[in-house]
Length: 239
Image (cartoon, rainbow, N blue to C red; front, side, top):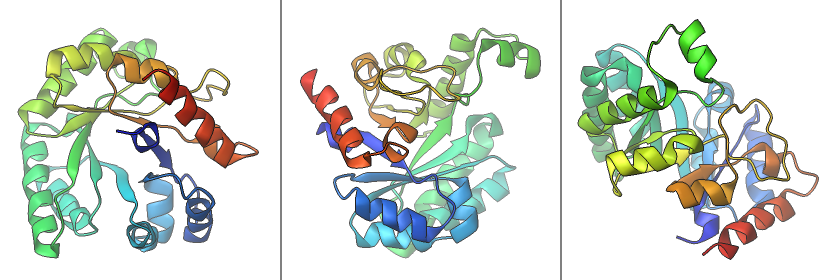
């Protein structure tokens, strides 16, 4: 893949008007993420706009519910023709397999290629202390993430969303065909924000990441076009 194809830019705005303006400001971006805020406020309008512009779409709604509800949500989401769709691995094997089956059904009914389902291992805003003291999970953070990834793989999901700090171990454990998508990636020249487990784009790719979700360093830059190009150039220089 070209460096530009590895970068997924989040549309972290609250209206479809703002989203479409950002999409058109960055025509060189090929892959966009639509999350909860934008989807809840604007519905599928932005998904239609992205597909009309022949962009790839990561619908990041992180479904987490009982199997029947997750299946229904994934079946409906797949009808939009999105490329990636997220679910929480902690919903369990039955819910994950139901979601996978339903996503294929929904896409087939709408004449689309089925989305690749990604499982959420652990939100990148959480660290080892939060895992132990807030969530009361006795495993060490790297071990917990591996167990979540293995459950996702056993449930036939295409891959997982994980911190770049866990990528190298997951690549070794889960193999080369398992998709690893990393949010919380920050260039060395950008503010870390609320990300607790981050790496630079080059380091994340070197560790084995397939795609990088990079938002604020691009979208909140005084010059988003230049910021995106700078990251692409940095990735290109390592290849």
